[in-house]
Length: 384
Image (cartoon, rainbow, N blue to C red):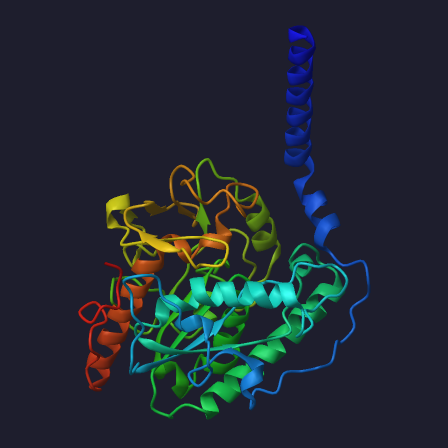
């Protein structure tokens, strides 16, 4: 019996090793097979009408707005001085079509979860507007098919129309903070290039958080109309990072990055990736875990989510990726290949992002001579 058990254990080890080796060798092919649609692109119709509240995931007049969620010990601002335009990441994972239908239950449940765990970081200083849009499915980012480009363009078209509707519904003098993640961050770079760079609107931007999508310092940044953030509290600038635990393998990101052309028309290959450390608010700086004001520890529906201080450190690697040391406990689910903590780009630094946005908003108000903001730190807006 003991020998049979040992043979069984040995067999399981061999199978596990074989599966691991197969995954490491063929993970890109496996991902494409699992997520890239096998059907041709078709315009799905049903374009959202952003004059209607139902077209929005979050906006100030919506009841049960997920972006106004806060963990225990944190409060949203009662009278926010800034309007926040937040673009959500990919939540549609199926391969039956190229763009998400508006009524997909699973995708919409994930949307609310991301609004609560990401956009909520800004509710201490801003009123959040987040459009529902016909996002490209995950597989669109794993292939260079023309179908994928059509799907991404359609999604961006929705975002651009939503931004126009957002501008039409806020005061013309209201400061604006822009934020996005993953697919949402990609659309945000295009929005900055198409609608904001070189226009008077650029002077109203408190900051732009382009998170979970690589921004080339040489091939993208000059076309975005705002500089990279260089110091903590600096207003009118861009922050960007992509989180990896160590040891890390960013080849999947690098493959897409190196093959692309930047918004300036220059190839991205060979150019540096922008990394602004969310723990320090500056590039090129390292921070110990003690500098982390609070990580949002995930739960299935955030009912028991809590803020944990000093959970992870962070440093910008020379290659432009944000490294958080060894994989932290409690985040094993949804970690992507290569120790990519993409899903947790906001959650890992939630309280620091909150404090960073508030500091940049205060500096913006002071620079513009507007009414001073009440510090959310003093009024209970930060983690305690």
